[in-house]
Image: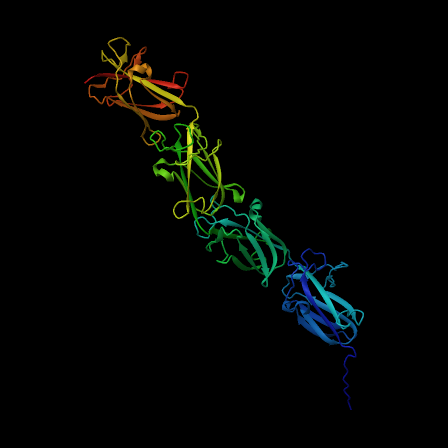
Length: 513
């Protein structure tokens, strides 16, 4: 005969607990977002007296401190064994804090204890909580950077205009909870954000621009985030392809929320007042170097070019810019021009460049005042680095040899029309005058011209009495340089301005038609 007798615990006890990620590897749970709870850790409870497994389970992070819980246990000797079936986590060191919860598992994930009213210190001495810390079995890291996707194709061509972006907020999520966060710092290049000491597993990166200037760009080979700035992935040795399969880099592309345009031109400030009067002698200047830097992103050069006078007010133009702080730097590589003074006119366009050719500004809807507040124009004024004057006169070539004998028969002629043409500025007429014999050798004179520039002088007699003589060839006398059409082209510089290097005289000979 067999008698089966059933017994229950006189004082039923409970064991509960959770698994936490020990971010700083000190065996203690600081309860920070980085020390998140870990789900699906296997838990096995064994009764030491009979070596029988009395309960099993898996951690469920939704139940907080009751991630595992075993009830109706009698007092006695027990061991708990916890393991990660994925192999991504291993037990942390045993903690020694006197104020925060400590990991109690040994290196094998085991903790043996006496369960009684002295160890079950909660719920009227019937509940014991086990805090189990885990660290990565393999240390992994995530890093990355945001780039400005200027051509909106999701690809980072690593050009200057596809610059890195500062100040983008980055959250790393696990199981929907933020476990790390940071802000991008372009000074750290590819490590603009970086999260170290990660275990393998499933994560999401969520990125956003707190300034509202940028929004996520389209997906492409260099951008994986969706329109909400989120990218979810598995971190393991197959995705962490750098640094011995321990590092994963995330490239995120961004575009301007409200694309803006910056354009401008360079003008010659003939009267040196910093203002563009739009007169012929305040002509546009070509081939001025233009650099645009983003001050919000460390002063990096993001666009560059040269002024093109055929494009008028679009002599340089940079499209698809986000709002923000910028500086423009303009220089003349030929050394012919330097920036004029800053203009103060209330009616005409003013030069904003300082003496170094720099102007810093905020580009937004208040400064981009054209085309529905999306376009800003910069009028940059320039003066001659070394101004040169051009003068001359018209003489009657009595003997028709092209040279001026300076005698009574070769008198000076009044009323000849004179035009100065700037060939480098697109053959634009920049100055006009008529010869005035009362002024002798200054019968016509044009001051404050830029040196190292190609000019042409075009002269004709409006009365129809005179025409240009032949080109002179005397080695000792002043020669006429005009061709049969009354034109003479030359470079104005210190070699042609032979009087103190700042004055050039043109002697023009004429004969009767």
